[in-house]
Length: 230
Ligand SMILES: CC(=O)N[C@H](C=O)[C@@H](O)[C@H](O)[C@H](O)COP(=O)(O)O
Image (cartoon, rainbow, N blue to C red):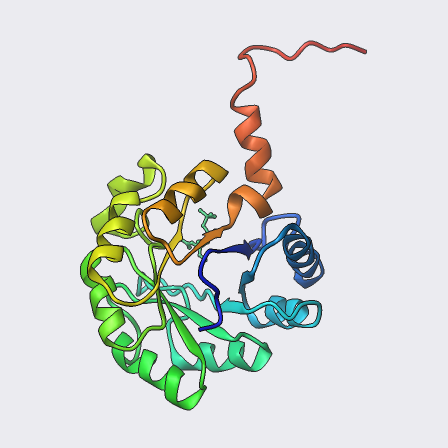
């Protein structure tokens, strides 16, 4: 198992509209995270993964986000994407393991192929206890709470911070190592995740998205016109 127990994993991702989009910035983020004590990196797309692979030996959870209007699944939807990110240097393949409609083969078959044909660990992003059970039975190495709040069935959880209840239920009922991911945005919440038995915690936005961090501070500003002090 590549992600050690008790690890903080830092997700280094920036979409195309983010000024930090691009492999140079994401590799720098990953180095900063490593210097800060991260024991793993999560990254999206072959270009970012290859650039991060070149600057660190930390285990990389690679994903490939591909949007298709016909299907809700966008995190590594098929084997072709998994093969591409494995080739770029991902040690672990992250994928959507929810029960939602998907293009191509079933998630069970996809997990099996990644393990057998690519010899990579599988990191299953799920949103419910049932999906966690199924991913574990299909051979996922890790099961993560990543998608709670982001599927139709779980949309109401998004406003409530991280899904600590799902985390506890998975720890109690699923034998794979359980990773806490999604809206863990303070050190206190990371502590709480480990208290509840998480194997590792993945933090993204709160560490690697300065635009969102700035917005959070801006929301705390007094309303009304900003005084011009010049
Ligand atoms: C739902 C979805 O697509 N989540 C993504 C998965 O890769 C990322 O956008 C998140 O940033 C990541 O999961 C870490 O979570 P947070 O940024 O909340 O710490």
